[in-house]
Structure formats: structure tokens, C-alpha cells
Image (tube, rainbow, N blue to C red; front, top):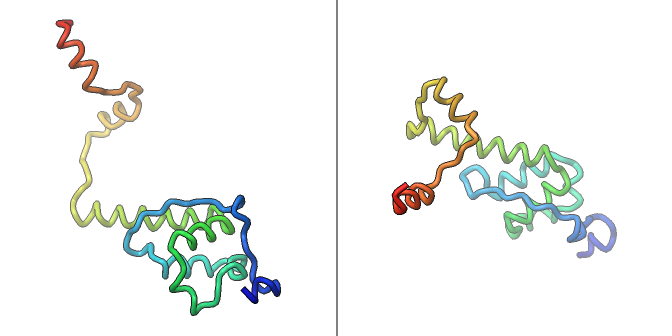
Length: 126
């Protein structure tokens, strides 16, 4: 608190805080978020002393870094999520092989599917 009063530390008003949702994945813990946040000089004045890092809530760190750094921080988190997902796809053989022509048709489709209209039609004898 002393550092805040003396102007050595800064704070962000609640109405300026931006929220970034990040899943709880390995490699996306408090330690990694603090390391990434510290790469940006503008975050140092908002973080407490290093001995207090262990007391910080994970979401507080994420929100602070995202509010101050914006897109580069969000991109970093997104890249970590994508890398984790790709690793799972590769390790567990979760990829789906699909014919390129069928994939193009699927991606170009604007139709939606639902069980309700089919059941409704069948029930009424259409």
C-alpha cells in the first residue's frame, strides 16, 4: 500500500479492467502468466513485489496483463491453447481425415441440422 500511495505502484480503475477467459491447461498457470506479463515494461508498476506473486489470483494476473498489453498478451495465450490442443490431437490421434471436396461442401454449407423438424415431420406423416 505504501508503494501505491508514494506513486511507485499504479492501479487500474475497475471500469477499465478487461476480462480474458483462459482455460486451466498445463503451461497456462500463474507462473507462466507472470513471466509473460513481466516481458512488458508497462505491467511492472501494477504488479506487487515478487514475494507476493504466490498470493495473486490467476484471473487477476490474466486481466491485468490483458488490460495493459491487450492483443499481444491475448495472442500469446491463444497460441499456448492452440499448441496444447494440437499436441492432444497428435498424441491421441484425434484428427479426422476427410475428402477435400466434401470438406469444401461442408464449409460452404449454410444449412443447419436439427432433430426437431425431422421428428415433427415424421409425427405428422409428412
